[in-house]
Length: 334
Image (cartoon, rainbow, N blue to C red; front, side, top):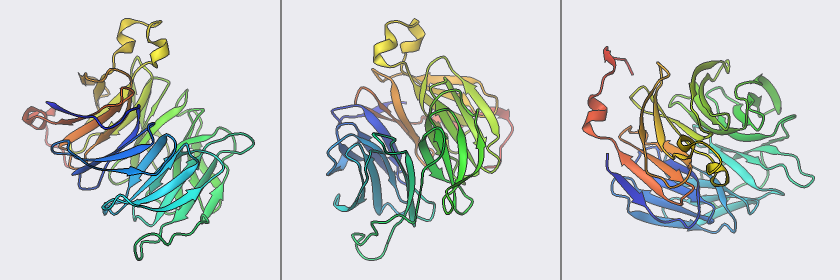
């Protein structure tokens, strides 16, 4: 599995995302630039430059037409994927920590930071897809402040009007964005801050990672924990493999605490775990710092990881990965 090393950022990676076809990879970083790369050869296609602060989060719509990003400069921006032009900018009182498109591309949810007299807030915007995309509404169709622990990650569920949120306390919840009401929660989904939330292709279950050193798969409707993957290092990201029963986990101790902990803790690998049997099946080394973000191509042929070291590594799976029979001889219906 020969990695392709993508060198286009001067600071650590915050989030990476494949488009729906899996031929493009978008990367966001603290250096305020968003890059887009060709997945098959690692060539940089272009950049999206307009933010004046760390870009914390990105998402791309299912048609690879619009890209949305959230930044420490207190703005959320909508971009044309094709031209790299910033089409619209929404301004907030605090930094934007997470953005996500709905599955019909019609809406975007964003979480803004709790800071200096401002509560953490969740807003949902309707995206006008008519014309060139510059004619957007400044006002959200929904705005609410989750009570209690602040929300840090979010996504639209498959149920209309419901948003899945992950919180600083480790809580996972469902909110009705029309009313701002918390419909359901699991206060003890994790024991520490939820660092990532990624959905299955049909959005019926999702995986979260946490600083509590575990990743968990949850049922979207009931928020029940279905599977738990316990590691020995704080996790920053978790992704679901496509077409194979694996989950990919990434993390590592922060640089300042590496010297004070055991040898194994400072290792910065992507860990592959069996989704059903909850056993670790392999590791891929490569980064010189914690793995901050992991994404799997929707085609299932490769995955990418973004590190604290400023590099993105794209790994195309070998033939042996597809030939492996993780269940023995049973054929599993996909």
